[in-house]
Image (cartoon, rainbow over all chains, first blue to last red):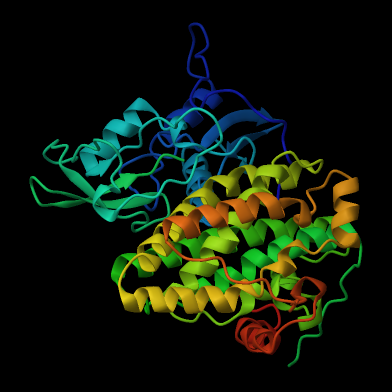
Length: 190
Length: 258
């Protein structure tokens, strides 16, 4: 583990361009990161997902701050590797990655572009998280165990039902559309 | 066996974090056993996903325990090179996975406990533990909802699913008092602001379990005088077998990686 940095409140991608002049090394790094795809969902970049929390200069090196999505996400180490490889390949190295757990990643950090890309890829993007931290247990008969009005990413029908709370990865749930009969995945709000 | 066992610190903060880590690690291993054996594909995938979450949480906690211990033990050494007596998970999580009803009733019990623990640990005096908890809490909520839905569906389902769920509950219930036995480790952790005494969660846990049982039309079993003692390192006969499976590779090929 690299040293724990201070908690960073900068929204992902929120680095302001320098007035006039060529893009800085940090700006170019952000552009490069927009091309580093998530290995499990290769339709969105790590920047789209909001897991790149900051890019900053630390002496001669670039420090890329990443926040993992799930505790057990097997892609975390691959992402770390891909991020460094892309930055080195763009001639922006040396660089290193800092993993930052707090504040915990939330699907609210997925960018608008990321949501659009998920949808185009056939994954229904997450809705906003409900306010507050208390999520009460609710028991529903199976037929009603459907998130309200989740639109099918293919035909936009709202006649959809949840098949399983866990899909091909921990971050997704499995649904099917009752109109076009196609199964699809939903990126769960977290 | 070629690799020697670690000598583990008795420091209460280390033991407190290890209890939590081992709870996640051993239940994660049990859930992982379902991979390829789930009753339906969706549940096979769900159980593997939850196993991944738990093992991920265990990795972070074991790393933190190693740092607090200060003897240079990393997550892998702590996961694979301790003796049975040095694992401090409650006995509940080491019991064999049983049938699907057994797994779901246990998951509901453990996910409810972990959710309550993570909620409080998010305010831990240890910043790293608080950060781990902030992430894990979100995952535990999904685990609890998943298991609770199944307990309701099975308990309130067919005669066969109900029979199995009742049998699972009767067996498992005897292992739940252990979760809330107060002791010096918990007292010390509480005093230093590291985390709650598990005993202090008993009321909230019992209330949430009662909600689930009511929705499943299951009766809460009678209390029993039996007390399991896994949290003190004294385990059931099942622990040695699961550790043998987990440790075989690292013991035979110390430091082996792929």
